[in-house]
Length: 186
Ligand SMILES: *[C@@H]1O[C@H](CO)[C@@H](O)[C@H](O)[C@H]1NC(C)=O
Image 1 (cartoon, rainbow, N blue to C red):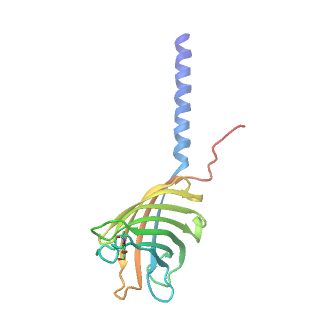
Image 2 (cartoon, helix red, strand yellow):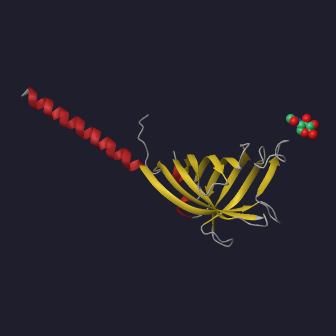
Image 3 (cartoon, helix red, strand yellow):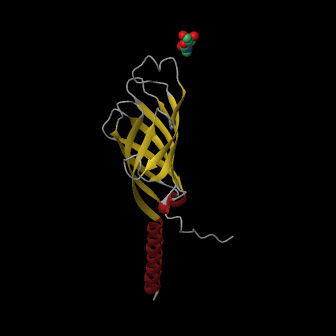
């Protein structure tokens, strides 16, 4: 008799654990985003502004110490007239003596489609000379609550006139489903 009770309790416990795991996995999502960054560094309407430099910036080829603030259009395709789906806003600085490697501190805000109003926070190193660069996603809001992930970025077009560069971004985002409400009884 006692054996049966123990078996029953074990079955109940295992069921609870399985249910918990199932509900946890339902709250986790993976979203892939592919977009292009329109980077206007000069011309009539620059979107990237240099706000600071140091004495070494003009001396070292890496441009060490240069600090920029940007509000770049994010488009679905690489062309200038591609649909704008968001903005990439924040600060980039050169923090490497030897090569032009940026430290990025950026927010991606999506302004169109199912993720409108949601943001991703990006923090990482972006060595512009490398073919393919990997930058971290460290947080998110809205649809991307509690996001982590990574971005693979590359230079799609480098303007020989130094006015308008285009960068390709491929993001993999691990995040919570914001529609799942964690129960709390107060
Ligand atoms: C930067 O350059 C200016 C002008 O040459 C100089 O007066 C200043 O001391 C330099 N600052 C540093 C930190 O080297």
